[in-house]
Length: 123
Image (cartoon, rainbow, N blue to C red; front, side):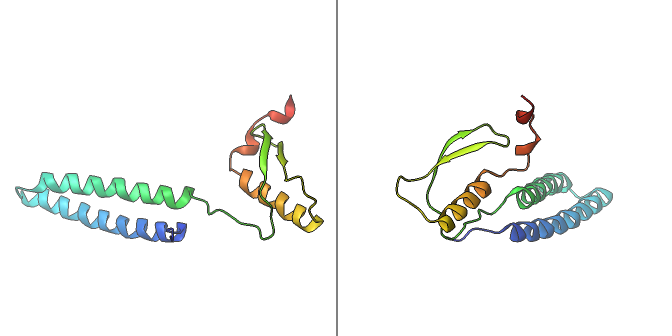
């Protein structure tokens, strides 16, 4: 199963934006000319604006999941939502390279843009 990348979402948003502008111009022309279906064009143009904003928002906010090669599966034991997280690894012995890869994977998995904005360290 393939997913749409953030770049594809932004390209789709760009084309939807162009279509919205063209429909906006057509709607303006319909009002000037007094066409009977001008109010339908208002609805279509508004909906295209909503679609454009939605695709742009998805393109900006989605982050691809990063996978680190050699990382072991782990369980999160404690997470304060700030700068502290504790993970548990399987009981078997692992190499230092695997441990490093697992710690990097845990760091990538726990990252979010607003995570370090809390005052958890100031307590």
